[in-house]
Image 1: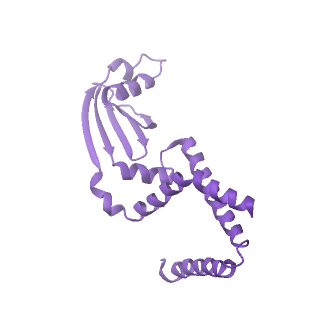
Image 2: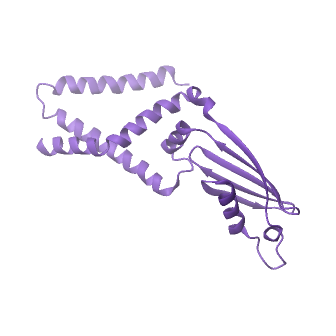
Length: 190
């Protein structure tokens, strides 16, 4: 009992912030309409060096210079998600939690149009909840939080077996909660 209690207390405390985060974002994901007005779109124009876009034969397009120019000039953030080279145009896209930016560059003139979409803090949190455009390390954080949730649940369930006065009522409530979730799924989920 002492080990179960110790594990339950300290796993709960260690995972308090991340469990709270996933609980809150579970609610915000279920009610996206509450935050629909937070999205902002910013359109910008600019000029890219033509030498980067039409290199001499045998040389590659200056991808790094193009991306860094966009980051430096327009404070573009997020990871580069797409870099397409076509005969007349280059398209560069960036994505991050609650953020995306698309750039269309004319290869002949060097003129480009950049459209940034910032979806607000709640969208950032929702994308982190889903692991969308948030990177491998954040994915590991999601996995760790799932493991912590399971361990907190298992140690909490183990504790009920040591509490003889609460064991039956605790197991009945756990069973009723499980049956209720299943019933809601069967009756109301499409």
